[in-house]
Each structure stands twice: as structure tokens, then as C-alpha cells.
Image 1 (cartoon, rainbow, N blue to C red):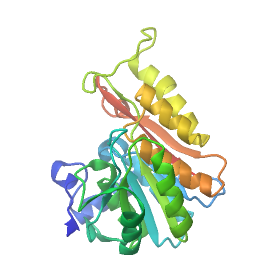
Image 2: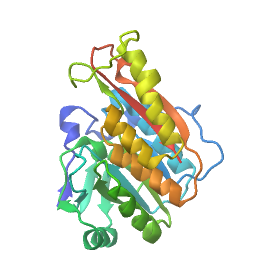
Image 3: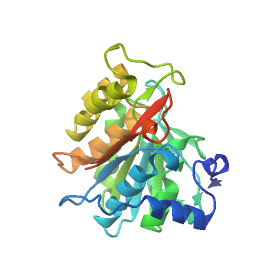
Image 4: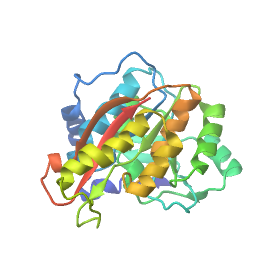
Length: 276
């Protein structure tokens, strides 16, 4: 079974190869660059490209430019509750406007044999699908593994074992958005001396991003759960764990933005791109 392009049907990205290519190229910003590392992992946002395509495109672009020949990409999504089991997708190929990406069957078999995980042909969720065309565009034909992680410490065991066995010519991408603020999400701040957007930018998202940059994995999980600062904190945690396995000491901030920057609405979401 193939993984269909579900989000393209509702405008998250274009199903047309030419339109999709134009959208990606429009977001490329060569003024965004990476200082002197060969990265192992990244944190990337997962909203529609209209809102955060610049961060998703340039973070994934830099992962390719600094890594060369990558054979496999682990992609971690979320939108699971703290007590949920992880989910692994068992599709044969994932469809994108640029062609398909193959699910690595050797790694899939290892995952199913070694972890308490829920298998699905595909999970109807945006956290991974929205990144697949960008990955296909920049990386060509790597195999992929798509896993959705709950925001708990069990993600550490999964990522550490995957890293130890399959890190050669592999990278790890964790997909999360940041604070979801306003009436659409029923989440507000208490400090009324600050505007909501200022609080999200300068307090709630900033504190969480600082933890991510400092590779504070468990602390970032705790903060996200207590402060609603990420919708898929387990996926971000996964990228930190992979970076720790490579002995990284600091993440590099590729950028930060919010949907409010694009559309000044009473409800908005924060986004970041980080590379380790």
C-alpha cells in the first residue's frame, strides 16, 4: 500500500510537480547558512507551507547541503498524548509530487520486533506528510522511516537503538510546531501586561527553544507539557537524543516565526527550525 498525498487535497501543499517545485524554490534563502558542522538531526515545523515553508525548506536544505550522500531519513511526528503508544507507518511507498519515497523494510522489521509500537499503513496526520515533498526534492531517493512519538521518555530508548544500529548515512528529523495560542486553541497567558503575541515570542516559545538549543531533552519535554509550548514535543526530543548520541553540544537556530507574522489573527502558532 502507498501513502497518499492527503494534505495536498486541502491546500497544505500543491499536488502539482511544477507548482510544488516553484513553492519550494520560492522559499529558499541562501542567506541562511550553517556554521561548520555535519548535522545529524533537525527540528522542523509542520504547518502549511504558506505559514512556515521558509523554515521547513531551509532547514531541510541545509541538512542536505552539509551531509552529501544520505541513504536513510528517520522522520518523527507527533500529535499523540503522553500515554499513547508510538505509531510506525508500514506503507510501501509514500507519494509526493516528485515521485515516491520508499519505506525501509529492514528498519521497519527492526522497529516492529524491538519496540511496543502501533503499526498503521499510514497515519492521517500532518506532522510527517507535510515534509515529504521537501525531503524528496532535496534528497532524491533515500529510504525513510516514519514514526510518531508521544511526549514521554520512552522516545529515548527508541531513538538510541535506531541510532546505534542504523546511523550510517542517516539523519533524524523531528517535526513540531510551538505554542498554539488564542481562542481556536483555548490557550491564553496570565500576564496581561504583555500582548499575547509578545508573550508567545519572548517567553513561552523562547524558553522552550533555549532548552532545545541546549539539548535539554527531558527538560524540554517537561516544559512543553507544563506550558503547552509544543504540539509534538516527543518528535523534538527524538532529534535531541540523536544529537546527544553524536556528542553534539549545541543546536543552531535556523529561524523562528509565527503564523501571526503572515496573518494577524487572534489565534496563532509558533514555528522554529533547529539543526544539530
